[in-house]
Amino acid sequence: MNETNYEKWFNLFSKHVNNPRSVEILQEIDIGYLSTVYLVSVDGNYYAVKMYNERYNGTKVLLTEQKHIMNARISIPEAVPQVIFYSSSTKNEFNREILVMEKAFGIHLTKDIFNEQVFEELINVLKKLHSSKVNSRPNIDEIERIDNYRKLILQFLKKEEIISQERFSNHLEALRDYYLEKNKLFNQKTIIHGDLWWDNILVDKGQIKIVDWLESSEQDYCRDLAQLKIGILNELLDINESQRFFEKILNAYTDKFEDETIFERVRYYLPLLYLEEAFYIPFKFFHWKTMYEENAETFRKRFIDYYKKSELSFKFKQ
Image (cartoon, rainbow, N blue to C red; front, side, top):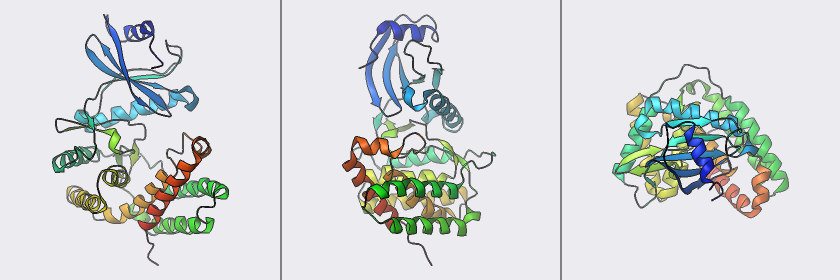
């Protein structure tokens, strides 16, 4: 553990918690590219303390995540940890931006605890989140997004001859054409989580807690559903079971929101999200070369796997 100085921790909480008597740093509970999360006990109350890495513009990241958590709590307060306080200045004890949240207890959603009851509870939570209507104008231009993917991945394919640039360009062009053809259908907008992987879902006595809201935004909820398919169902279940549960989700959403175009929109988002996973999203924080240089072979295999899944999940009807 890197941040073990007791006096620093005590000073941090003394500024935000009334007269703390004891502070205990229990363990690191998550280490990522953007941050490290610690489990801390203050007078017997547990907190998750997220310390952001300076090299990735921690202040902006911290304030973004804090805003998304507070927005999500409006719809699903029972499923989202509460922000206790944050320090967006590096002039604190640790010279790092810090976000302190209530500790969400539970077990990561693994195949051992995934069942119909847990699945139903997760979908109920997500339906509440996706019921939150927003009135702001769309801040994501899908054509611009596709064009950015083309530019970035073509740079990679010039270095790695694992699939032809023509094959990739044709696939992306088909997705682009499909979006343009169905453009009028893409007018749904709500709060989404944006990173629905199994390790961001905690289960505690049947209750769901969703953590890591950094990628949350205001977009079409079909993007969340596609991510759920890739990051939860595909990870935990075999092919047939994954598809069965996914169809169950789509039918539930069709009924709940009277959404007649959900299948057409998911047909766009699913291959797009496979491409994002192929390229170690989020693009906005990392240049692909950073991860490629860390482990080129792993990066290469991951790209091939998810790219092929993207192709298989989308066949453009001429």
